[in-house]
Image (cartoon, helix red, strand yellow):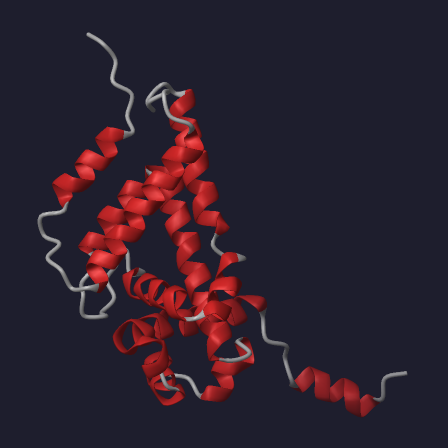
Length: 208
């Protein structure tokens, strides 16, 4: 039986709403995104994460077990946002958004996932354990791309002489090549026409 003292204590300590918890988690993800983009995974110290999110380490790691879990959650969140763009506009639009993203780690109202994607690519090359953990979280972008291509195929807009799985792998390879290009700091201002060519290469061309 609950004592009067316990009941009184419960009344004085209101439970934190799920909306509040979700908002705090979003605050951490948004702040840490700019921190990882600016400093990389190793350089994103706990102190820098505190400064970027405006929260204490206790608050940050109440929501995420450790920095690795935070980065994986951020990368998964960004992959989900990219998948949303793919579902509406296709994977080439994701690439166009990456070209529009500033290279200084700042955030914009548009696509702001480039820094995370660059860091994911770097860690995939250098960290076997991370590669295994990331493989379990990266399927949604592939699934969204394949579904979008199948929808285009059914609508008669996609070339029908190449399997959808092959076209999916082709576009994902172009995406990784673009990310590597940006990671090396190479000029990107003239890549718009290249993406036009990529987009054109998967379309169905009807005879006149």
